[in-house]
Length: 339
Ligand code: AHG
Ligand code: MN
Ligand code: MN
Image (cartoon, rainbow, N blue to C red; front, side, top):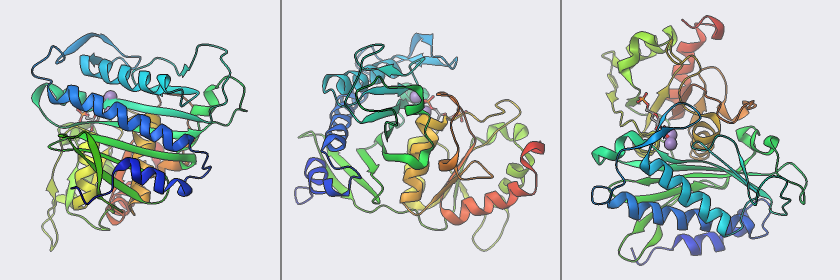
């Protein structure tokens, strides 16, 4: 690994690629790198310390918070706040967006961060990979004023950077600033991320489909038809089913091997489950940068204009041809008459 360039070096060397290269975005990504090492350390000893299980409260979306959800949220929030890198943060685990320094605090910082601090948290108790997802926008409100909700409700195609950390058999940080997708593996002995996966790309075709098929009965007909197609006996099918239940891990595997991840609407979750701002947009940006595609079944995820912080959308993301095929099946049923 020692012949690899470190994430720190990579960020400095590629600063020119950042849209507005004042160094602020570089420092922001460095803060995320630092926080991810802290969370990684805790995740790695999860069975040994009292951090497994339920925190005893629900987030704004009515989901049980795990102790590690709360811990990871605190670490990322604190790291970004301490380093005074951003003017505001929105998190899956916070009711509302947070203005750094409190209400009415003005800022000259250019960026806002949106994050899912711990993705796949129901897997933590059983020693299965979890992740962190982040998304960064340049604020649209003027510098020197408090950050506003509109700064967070920008369509995904305006992201300046996005990425994830997967706390897996090894820990990786994968990100894009709009110049391809690059993956860095943590050497835990020395606490340094090294460039291990430059220019990651989705194979155009794949043979893995990832969906929670237990909810089949509740899926729209277009999804049911596509799943039948995945299972048909043809030259390159049936596809393999692989579903970890951590978006980050399922996405990461599919990017390396070729596949599609689907979290559709259902009669139980009419808007889908995954959150546009914290999960779908960053993954869609990464997917497109890696030559893949992300759709809500009918249209490009990155063009959806968000209306709420915790908005949910259905998602079909992964290898380009697979997502296109799934969209063909969806198109047979108009969006309003899906069921
Ligand atoms: P989170 O842990 O941040 O709430 O996200 C969980 C998400 C996603 O990671 C995963 O793919 C999906 O929920 C699993 O949902 P189901 O259990 O409904 O399949
Ligand atoms: Mn999540
Ligand atoms: Mn989460």
